[in-house]
Amino acid sequence: MWTGFETSADISKRISIDFQAEARWQQTSALLKQLIAETGVDYNLSKNVFIGASYKIADKYKKNGYYPEHTIAGVVGYKKKFDSFKFAVQSKLNVSKNTYIKDEASLRPTVIDKNKIKITYTGIHRIRPSAFVETYHVVAPGSHYHIATAKYSVNCSFEFRKNTSVDLGYMLRHEIDDKLLLSIFTLTLGKSF
Image 1 (tube, rainbow, N blue to C red):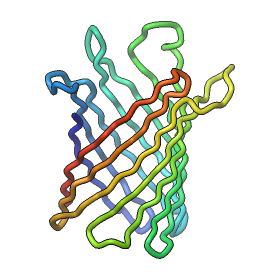
Image 2 (image 1 turned 90 degrees about the horizontal axis):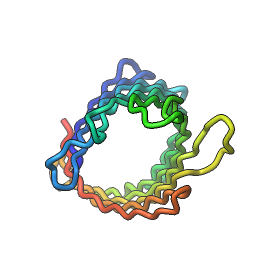
Image 3 (image 1 turned 90 degrees about the vertical axis):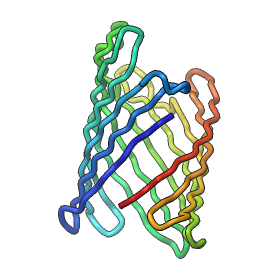
Image 4 (image 1 turned 60 degrees about the horizontal axis):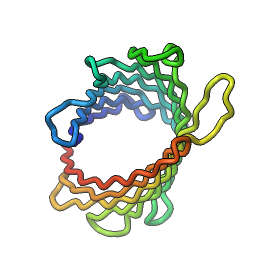
């Protein structure tokens, strides 16, 4: 189970800042697996193109306690509306350093390039179906640039009351290196102010 909140503010016509916090619990909700806080800033280069930077700290539970992982990221994105469709694409470069050391590889930072394409249909009142594809590319010295993980997702958001919505989603996560397929169903209740 995941719980969280996020907030954002426009500093000017081109600059916005955001903050989000999230708690991820084990399925029984008896154990806090991760506690995440992230803040970032976006700058609109034009109506459709933006760049941004963010910092995230994630306290992750291991066998003998919680260990923070620090991540800095840079992002470039493009978004545009075509009639009743919203199209968005972005590339985000993440550099992470984990404080949990289990082997020599853990001493080095992890660099992952995340690429995402999302399409949302806005032609139905109070209902927003969407779909996205996201790929994770490992960037590491001495290794070839390849897709390590791919996510395929469909989602439908129902706004049943003003500023209150329920989202139903399905995601297929393909861990290519480990030859693992994982199906994830989500139910999200959201409230905006």
